[in-house]
Image (cartoon, rainbow, N blue to C red):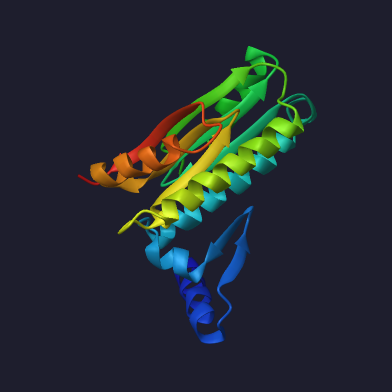
Length: 190
């Protein structure tokens, strides 16, 4: 049934000319669906992971009020970034994320620190935008193959790529202003 609904949504994009829907916290376009190397089931599973994680973590007042965390899923691999003031909070966040259905692997990149100020997060958003733009400028490369997340000027690159594609994505990110570090969470196709 889910597959039928998904196919109808994709079909609707092409018929109506409307190419964007909001799925959870992310935006999915008809074009990105065509170019994404994940299966449609993997895309839906990743959205479900992010939605469930957000709902479960935000249900805890202490985590919601005292921590800053982001959950990003790509092909069942989950990146957890942000800051928590205590190891106890970090461990609880990871334990909650780890048991969400369809989670294959958790990359714990939470730091023990006070939550970052909003101006740092705004700068991270700018860096992410620059990296995504740089990826669109690479010849014979599709930016939909790589998901970009930035936390405290560290750029995380996730995706299903060939090794040479991963290398050019890293190189494009490396040349952007304010990038302190690049961490890859690629699944290589070769």
